[in-house]
Image 1 (cartoon, helix red, strand yellow):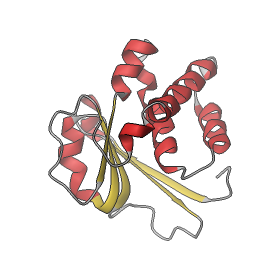
Image 2: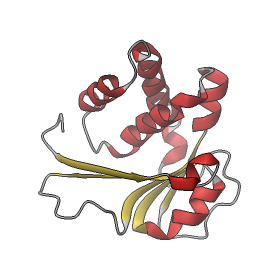
Image 3: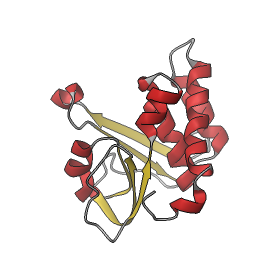
Length: 160
């Protein structure tokens, strides 16, 4: 929204929130969004094997699959770009805060796609995090940027 684009987000957690595959969908468009659900996505982020297995069929051919490094079985898809990134490990071992994995993931998605401006992403993140956690979340976003910036030579459509 900070870039003047139309945005809609939906999520489903239900019983999955306690250890299974949960799902959040975000649509970003320069045009009007007529339907707020995703049929086939351009980008799929899977932090767990369970989520990857459950949602891989929703990724359209030519799409981008971002997997956490902990996902051991890569899907048998040669029609998508697959990136393996240590998102959870970075949250736990570098920042010592597992709950910022989602913000690290946003930084990585930004660096891979540039779907929004860096300024808009940072503004959106910092306006939505709990008061008192702004610096932690800003650092998490920066770590997500660095995960891609520091490995660009290994990333373009390759599993690293």
